[in-house]
Length: 312
Image (cartoon, rainbow, N blue to C red; front, top):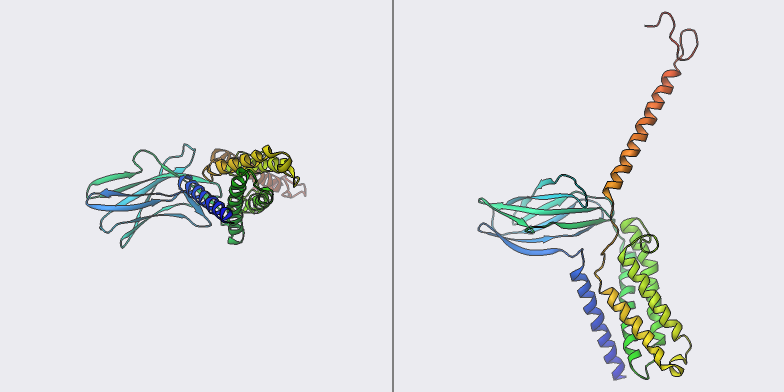
């Protein structure tokens, strides 16, 4: 009993550690820091994700008045000219605003701050990329997060159990797979649909790393489950426990990959081409309507489109 509790504690610590690492290294984690602007110290948080309607706020804080600046931005992976927007001051807080983008749209941006002739750029030599997404209801997001966390926890516990010569990881493997399916293949696509408009953007439809790594984890566990499906499989074939250990390690490694990497992303150039083509079609349709209406005007002789002798 004591050994089992210790293994659960170890599994929990590994799961919490991997979740923390994944979050801290992910592409949506804010870029936080402080910088001196003249005689002022500005604390900033360059956010890299925005959900829901409305523009994205980028907050700053300083206890010294007189700091001014601009946020400089453009659509990500385009040759657009850089746009500029003044930073708004409100008591000891500063706010920069990025215009709302459609789900999966990205903007790259940086900040320029100035005080008493001292000009600084944040970051120094690069830009920050932020991704926009639709609002995800808590009724879908919370079950997704809980199920995925439990899948990771139980997967790790099953792997530790399989390392014991007399371990019995079969039931833990089954429960872990159930939570992986619930979190990754039921609530995961629902969250994806609300956030980016698509249920699944992994293989074979796309390269979304979050979807693909979830699929790889499921395949690894299904292989392990096939190896230990019979209740006495490990007693008759002790070496098969390494399938469970392997699946547990695979799941741990792929979930160490930062969340949202290689995620959904708008191709702005393709979007612009589609908009231009649609505008051209609408203009052509309008022109056809005008031509049809003009040719249908009755003449004084009753013949459509022919002006009578007294017509101006």
